[in-house]
Image 1 (cartoon, rainbow, N blue to C red):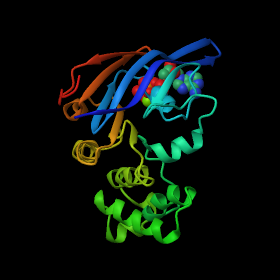
Image 2: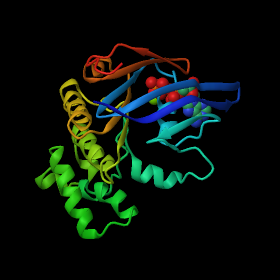
Image 3: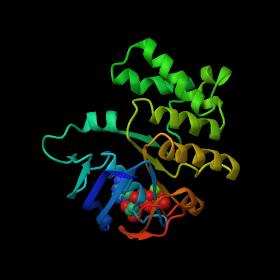
Length: 234
Ligand SMILES: Nc1ncnc2c1ncn2[C@@H]1O[C@H](COP(=O)(O)OP(=O)(O)OP(=O)(O)O)[C@@H](O)[C@H]1O
Ligand SMILES: [Mg+2]
């Protein structure tokens, strides 16, 4: 049982650089489902991060369409700030936490921006952090004083703060050792398979294919479908 949430059609993103232009994303089309892990692998510079940023509306493509739950997010009337806040959560390779804030405060921040009460923020942040195994003294630890694996778990809790349907993860295990990386993969896989999120990951780490329901290879801005470990819905 899978329900499509994301429909990307014919999307291209070109960067102007001194030497000319780089077609980072070249007429890419794909769909992703709720309750599934969709993974994009491919070499450095192939356009993976750019594609993820386009889907998360951090970059604007010059052509193509992106629908989320049937709603066009690139249309003139789309509210991109609201889309980002309510529909997507980002997990980055370098965590991108605010180092001077505590774990709890980092997770509360997106809820604060969305206008939640202080009490609600505190309660939900504590729950989300507990779900990823961050408890006790770690809640009040500044995030420049915690390990990489702990940081990535805080970042996942932060991505979930406003309960988005889509989690976008860019090399989520890129800075973690194998065991810690596996823990992060298990959490992300659980978000898809148990909490029914749409998890879209880009990575160099081909072991992530094992927990993926759908997978693509990206090369020179182009996407092609490849077999995925779970192989359930392609
Ligand atoms: N802001 C930018 N300005 C100009 N060129 C860019 C910009 N961002 C990315 N590029 C170029 O677009 C191409 C795709 O980059 P992208 O970061 O999407 O690749 P990637 O697959 O994520 O690589 P990696 O695996 O190393 O993270 C590269 O040639 C890159 O140099
Ligand atoms: Mg990248």
